[in-house]
Image (tube, rainbow, N blue to C red; front, side, top):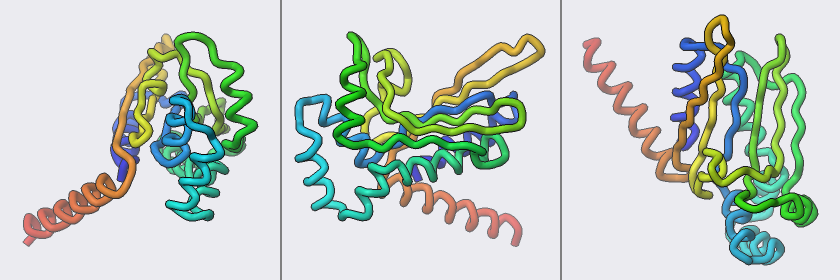
Length: 193
């Protein structure tokens, strides 16, 4: 689906250098709600509308961070070889949104950012609301897109390099990825016969 380009990039980059950290914004209802709140809609009416459309369980997974945490664990496995050893998730609710809005400064935007990083042999993860400079690649992502920033440490001088990857979230990207996988299997089968 929409995370496939992220996993492919991580697979490629783990061979090119030492992945130091990853940061992602995942598309989905939480991103759409956050985006619409910045345009003046109230959190409560957006949450009520999303719950009516998608159901209580789906919205709970989205707003509690369960869905994003699962995605980050998959990306951490690709980047570091295992799930985070410690993980902090801040819920997305009216109180956390109000607190995050209060911390906003000029030329900043709010995003729900998932991060994982490695210190020694331990991997840490977090999901929280962040005020990002509007020039930050994670601040520029649209609500229906996923975006990943990979920070690599290369060489003896430990120079850092960032890779930005994105993919669209939702039904069609998942369908496209599934069809591409099926075609790969078919062409491999034809090549071997």
